Image (cartoon, rainbow, N blue to C red; front, side, top):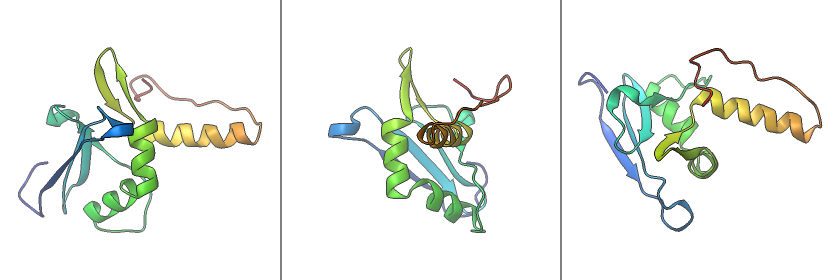
Length: 122
């Protein structure tokens, strides 16, 4: 996070029991909102949660969207993985694509997820 505006907060979550090894870091302030990344990720690679909302304050909006108990547990448990020993946490576009695909599968419908090169498909 850059600048001195707002309150800087950082929180490391260390999952125990079911979430062992799923450590991550959140940091945010009132001017830039919330950023998140697996622990030890260099700051330029931290991600921003992007989702439509009527909440105006960036930090309040991002925390409200990403940290609801159900979503937080889902991201921690179902959307965090290891790729060649490197921990990765889902990006918003990946999360919402999977959620949309799950709905189509439940309804027994087909479809295509179209993403361009460099859009974070991995």
